[in-house]
Length: 239
Image (cartoon, rainbow, N blue to C red; front, top):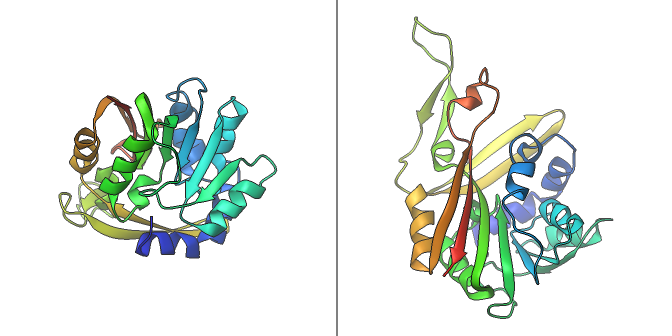
């Protein structure tokens, strides 16, 4: 996509490449990888990775036999995706205007990317165009509860446990920027908060039936991150 979020991610491309390519460093390894990949069907004609970034999801899918083409608005990230030793084809394009034949793909994945688009509905409409009837889109998203709030110190005398506080309106879309510093690496995540209904309605309005929705938390019950859903895995079929 074009717009402020696309520019922010291109500006942060070098930071993101270092962050994403450090094994075990990112939430991909802790929360997502196998759970998300297990939802994707067997390889078919064409698997589009929309918002492919530096290409790690596409590389994992290609290893299992998928014919992957990545799409991303960032020239820097597309270059990194293609030039990786395990890289695959990728093109610089907006998610709302992909140079892909109508009904040309049987699988679309959008791993942690659709909440980084300034405009959701045109991207969903374009996914419906490029997917064949019966094809499926597989999305991983920041859970809207997570993007609407943050953890704070609990001022209650009865407990020292942190509490989760909604910072902005859950129902109103808004941009956010979360800075993370971990093990010597720094990354600022730019995104667009939207309530869950924005995603479900955009899919329904464009001829999709939602087949599966998983809410992802930390499996460690002692972790504060086990108390709220952090991410969503969503599968929808084009009717």
